[in-house]
Image 1 (cartoon, protein in one colour):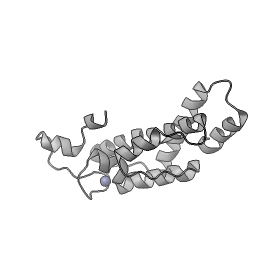
Image 2: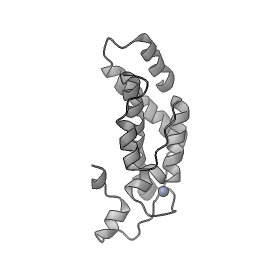
Image 3: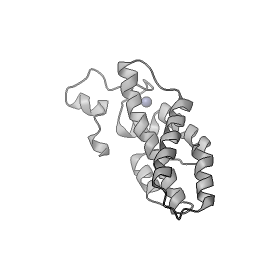
Image 4: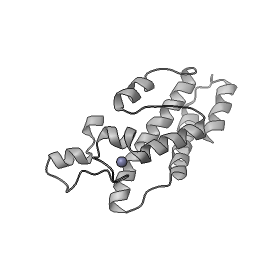
Length: 145
Ligand SMILES: [Zn+2]
């Protein structure tokens, strides 16, 4: 799926588009790796989310992210919650590119992180198994609500 994203580097190869510069930072070529893992905007988003959910993740490439997401941390429920948060963050970074290009606006980091947390919270509480411990429920509420 990652390789199907029509990032600017790919569009330029197809002869579409006039430049390949990342619209979020204007510093370098927009590639999947740059956009989601190396762009200063994305990096700040990851840091802001980490701070809000009290979890640290350091990934600088798609392969590192894929490796991280496949390793459980702190139990199954908590792993899935953290995975949901970071995948949702990436999902929200992509539209920021289009918004920057077409609307000339970009969502503030705190707003973006709050949207990610809120969406994750409502999605997760809607599918939480009844056997989920109260401790994990409290943890989910603490980091996402
Ligand atoms: Zn960038």
